[in-house]
Image 1: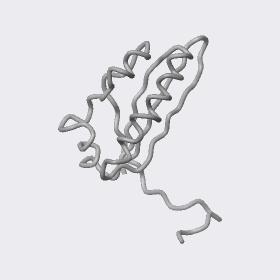
Image 2: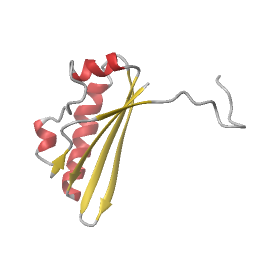
Image 3: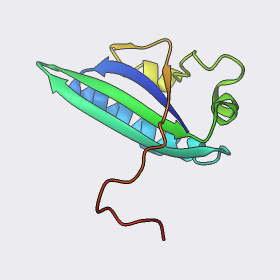
Image 4: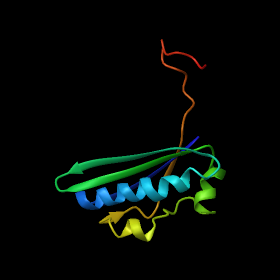
Length: 110
């Protein structure tokens, strides 16, 4: 599994607009792509700015390429999103999710 990590900054109003864009346009599109697993939209207010992190989880790098094309490091930020953000990452980071054993006492599968 691959985690894709992207970040941005916005005003509180811009962060709200971005959240609406993400849930209304981005997330429905991601859900149609083979190999998409899940997404997390994280926000943190520092002073008068909101830090945004978007984490998406994919089955493989091949699945990520269904979103990005051949260059998986380039961030795909739509004009509607750019218009409400103060700044945003032009690239993304990818992490392989380690296959960890379940915690002691945690229920097993099924």
